[in-house]
Image 1: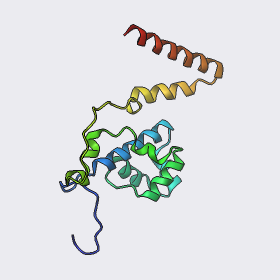
Image 2: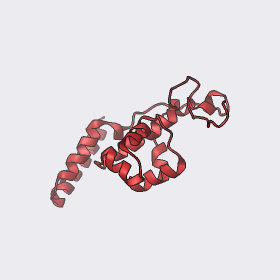
Image 3: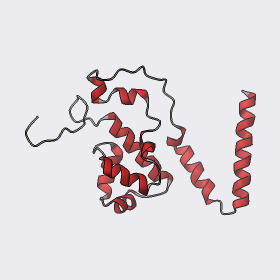
Image 4: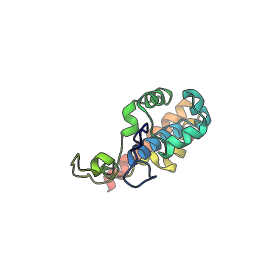
Length: 153
């Protein structure tokens, strides 16, 4: 490695972001979107441009620990949130795993329902209901419908 250069955290194939950086970035985007926050607003809150936020969300730029801490505070989630629901295949493609430094049997992949557009739209619509009593009744109805579909299956 040339002198004065830091390791990029990229995978063995040049130019591809580390899969873990992509996952963390997608979790930043998920939480920002759930809050209805723009990339520009998030950038302002942590002292970045919206282009830098875009790069974080794509995984093109790695998020350092202090920045991850800032993001967790602004997005009101624990730091661990950014690593939750990581597919086993994602962590197994990390450079340390590719070099055989850690062995672990992958778990079956289950897609994250929180990452679906349908979920985001449902949550946004739910919180647009201004009457707390109506919102509570919708919540109770949804829970009872979910319980009904479990017993029928």
